[in-house]
Amino acid sequence: MKNHLLHTPEGVRDIYNGECEKKIVLEERLRQVLRSYGYRPIQTPTFEFFDIFGKEIGTTPSKDLYKFFDREGNTLVLRPDLTPSIARAAVKYFMDEDMPIRLSYIGNTFVNNNSYQGRLKESTQLGAELIGDASADADAEMIAMVTDCLRAAGLKEFQIGIGHAGFFQGLAEAAGADEEAEATLRNLISNKNFFGVEEYVETLSVKEELRELFSMLKNPDLGRDELTRAEMLSQNYPKIHAAVRSLSDLLEAAKHYGISDYLSIEPGIISSYRYYTGIVFSGYTFGSGEAVVKGGRYDSLLAYFGKKSASVGFAVVVDQLMAALSRQEIEIPLPENGTLILYTSSNREKAVSEAKKRRAAGGIVELAVKDAAKSEEDYAVYAAEKHMTELLIMED
Image (cartoon, rainbow, N blue to C red):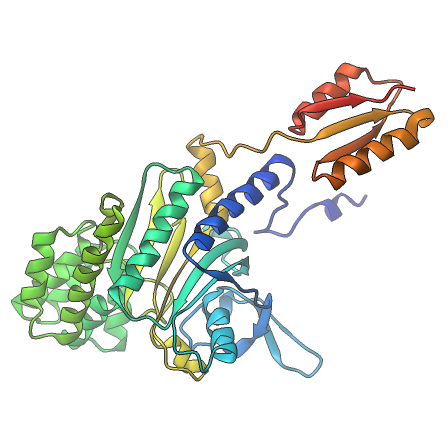
């Protein structure tokens, strides 16, 4: 028995028939949004040297990487994240470029998650990176593109939570938290245990204004008045103050895109990617326990590869987005076109000639030799299932 050969390893899956076609249609919709903003495609290798995703980068932990060796003994990894690859390529090919660089990509990522997490170990990401622009306008452009991507996918109800890496980092530094204390706080916040955060902050003996700023971490939608309050409370803490100002500037720039209803300021957003230095954001919708999009600003990452350049980007997790669309019963309509030509051996030449002519004109044509055991109705049903609009029966 070789039935075990039919199964895929845990954490990966086949995508076929209508689902695969819908995924391709969805990806093309998203690509079109990125093209409309002037982003040019780039492709990077599926595997890279280990150092591209090493601890110093602040990406996926080593234990979650798929590692192997080349013939020279170099350690290679399947990419768990595309941003470091894009950063490496940008430094290599655009080292002397002093104008903003807009790049887009699509590719699969590989993370060896624990099986109990129930996540796919291979997933498709489609995203964009804006390199060489440190402005709030660049941040707003990213958020606007995310919004347009989710709307192009068919979503009507979604929310993009926006935080800032400097907000928590500044709080931890101002509170005098050592590495262990910072890790404890980070873990509590990541698990949304804000009661635990407040309890832990009490042990740090911080000033009242810091305690109030810590309490803002639990707020899922910080309003304008609260942002103003945070700005006032953080005047003596430069990193926190800069983070709050950055969030305010982003909201001001983003309002011109007419997307404010989709945005919420969430100071408690903490990314597992430690290379983020500025805004961080995640997009959520019904039917998906995971974010369907994530991104942020990483102004120090390119310097690791040799070029100082501000950068911001995002990635749509296509598989999560597909799942959310399915659970919300939002259809991805497939194009209704194409012809099924049904023929017999006696008119094969005529059928092939007709198919070639139609394909040369840009048509989609499938050929089928008539099976005596099947009726014309059977073939009509088959054509409809394939979203073909015509059944052409060749006559002798």
